[in-house]
Image (tube, rainbow, N blue to C red):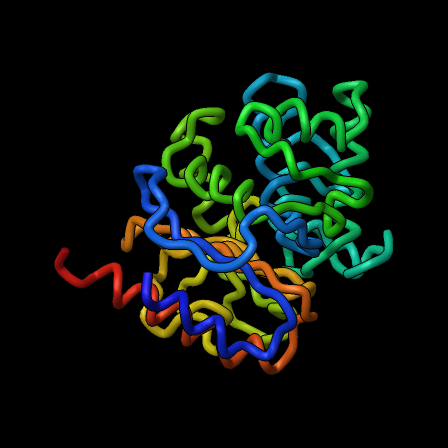
Amino acid sequence: MQSLRMIENWPVPTAAAAVVRADGSVAGAYGPLERRFPLASVTKPLAAYAALLAVEEGAVELDEPAGPPGSTVRHLLAHTSGLAFDEPRTMAEPGTRRLYSNAGFEALGDHLAKATDIPFPQYLHEAVLAPLGMNSTDLPGSPAKDAVSTVADLIHFAAELQAPRLLARETLTAATQVAFPGLPGVLPGFGHHRPNDWGLGFEIRDGKSPHWTGATSSARTFGHFGQSGTFLWVDPDARAACIALTDRAFGPWAMEVWPQLTDAVLAELARPA
């Protein structure tokens, strides 16, 4: 895809990217697809997928207690447990605010490890990574932010998010719709939003502005970005997903060039073949 050539002008040492159609085919790719990059918070959708598989397998239930008092697995996935950003400190009653929380995903990982008697990184590998052939991806630490992967591997995950084989379609559909509608909160890097909509492990575009996706991204777009300069979005209306991994930390540069790339990708996808 010609639009991916825009990445050549990004102010980053190294970047790799791909666009994946809903049928799993690769519409275009750029850069070193096999290079491993720290994902930062793009780890969270992978962790959430493992949690949803645990729900389908009956190891846990979405509405069972997990995290601080009054919180559930669903609250942890939706950033509504009330836990603080990076420490296990309660800041609000569960279900009342959208408090983006690494600590919440770490509590989720601990809860799943106890429920399955399998360390969370191993569960993620066995449930998600190995079945999808993501052989260059691993989780050496926190389920909130420590996965390392490649664009080549995330192509498989982007395909799974559009045509699920591991999860039931209805489970994924529910996870990518708004959980606890109407809650306000801060989208890291982009300020306060009313509402700040999320699904279960996936941020939902809706009407947020400013945003890291494009001005032409559909409201149904879902995904995640990471502070290591990474993102993955799926736009169901465009029937496509886009992955970009870099080795420069998120900052104003990304807020400028990521939406430009997304809009260019969507415009190119919309052109008649």
